[in-house]
Image (spheres, rainbow, N blue to C red):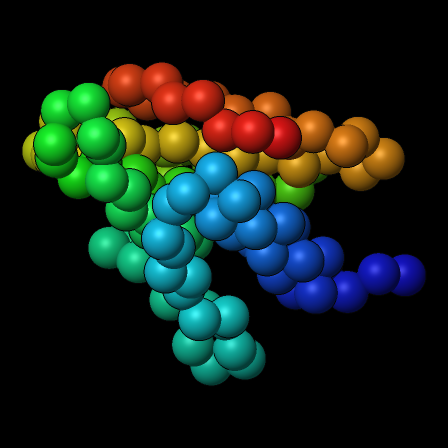
Length: 117
């Protein structure tokens, strides 16, 4: 039996590495603990990333929710949608890793970005 927290943290690290290899600067939420379950950034992101866009001379912000083998529940999806509506310039994405599959499935809520996977 595999520890789900370790598996989830490993996938968060994989996603962070993919983004950093693509030039993003990432902040990762601290891991959940026994008595401290909800530790996401802004209440809904596992990773928050920033990148300088040379073409527009602006910073691009991206919030990523990382999941393993399933999409987030309806409550978390609503939080992501609300965040997107409140801050339309921030890219909101889900990154879903499936067992025995190399590349994750990435679902965007507003703008799309190309992440080298």
